[in-house]
Length: 149
Image (cartoon, rainbow, N blue to C red):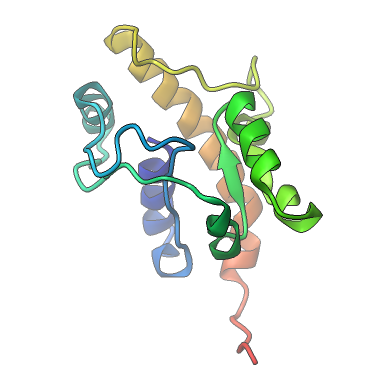
């Protein structure tokens, strides 16, 4: 959900070409599979298209490809920090809900064993936090690009 929401927000702001966003789990349980139908339905009800999402796995090599690594709960945050090779990589890891000052928890709950309402509630949490994240990133994204040497 978070990747779909973030990409859509970036596209709406005309910054889609400046952002690379990937969703990846810490395990390999569903590699290559589509998102859960309830996730896709919840996204669609709010106007998002999650049909292109396929499960991928984050690995220690993924740190090199990412400026920021956003975890949805403290368990994944802990795992990702343990996988980091050094303090720089560990410093890339943050919790999504840290970007929502009104969040009542640090963890986005896993709605898998719950009903439709929980998927919609989780999407609402992700939307609020993603807007906060985007507000922090937007000034840097709008800044002129500097050539890399």
